[in-house]
Length: 532
Image (tube, rainbow, N blue to C red; front, top):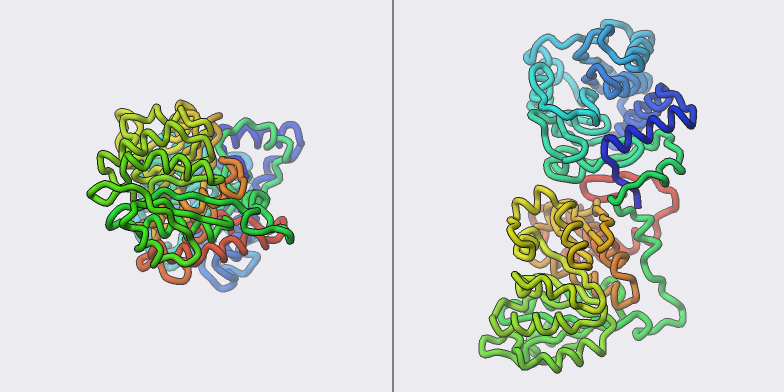
């Protein structure tokens, strides 16, 4: 995984690099600007003949922009700079890069900001805009000329590449401070910034590319950060390998306690996902009258009928048989499509207190624990829970879906620590938290996954990996990453609007194969639709 940092932590790393490793600040700036130019071509194709306007502020972010402008011009782009500051107002390093640009081009390529209307005219004549206005140090609301120019950049509908973070975005909280650039691509330096993966940052950052500017790895290793980004290399290392001598018993038996009348699809999708991610055997325990329905739907999955209520949900009388069912499985998932029938709720509560094997609880299993979340601490093996913000709010006293979404990292971390379990808090940039306070953010996934059943697929993938023997943390992070990667592949083929959960099931094999066959040291691009 890659550490995700705050603005202060990144500044600390840069200061150490300059002061201790004796790498000049201008060298870091040159590498940053070079990275921007390279990412633009890798992302959008050759720049030769294109008109590019680079909007530069007075600080080091502007300095990175001057470097990028010089190097884009060298690649035969028609480059103009719109500057918000006179040369005398520039930071020392930015002033040096300004002089180098003027030497390579000429002063007529540098235009001072006069008015929004003049800027709009310039932007409309451009094929691409580069935002090098405000860096990671921004802490107050954007007003005046800077607000005007950002508003203008957003209005013209041209692709925007932001340098390090979109201008106007708080690098730590991910909130827009007044006006903020809505970037198509953000090229960030050294390590990812936490604000790019929270709140408005998720929408404003666009695709995210990470550029190595030469921070010594030992400095990064010494940095204390409990938040990290899941990478394909890490997932590749976690995935279980298939032994030539292996058989279906080698790869675990996953049990899924799921289903109610009208909701057999949730059970079926969870079971299929568990098989697709590699579990050797999968069995569903379901209300007896629904057993034949699931048998007809599923070919490779076994079913066990359980006592049911008159409403055709699992009955309290099923407890002993379910305990025996769980004891015979390597891991279990509880919840998809169970319903919130009062007797089923009692059953889930009683079953949860006696869980001993690795388990994942989702959907109606979590709803059954509303006001009774303390039960989760009684599990012999810390379970994994997979709430969406609404379910998380019901588990945590005095929370609302809105308050959960405002502080997704804090909410997941706090609940995981207090209850001693693993949390997969679903949503845009899913957050995974473990009991010791460590947090991972998943870079894969897209809005097309906001459709019924995708959570059941995730639950199945988690239990499938648990059944194969992956520890809870590895299973939670790996399943979440592959779930999002499957969604990204589905989106590429179907489009976000038309996607359904079954499309994810179809893409799990491709997501697995792409991750397993990824070349070591391949260029890392943290895109809106995943790490590639």
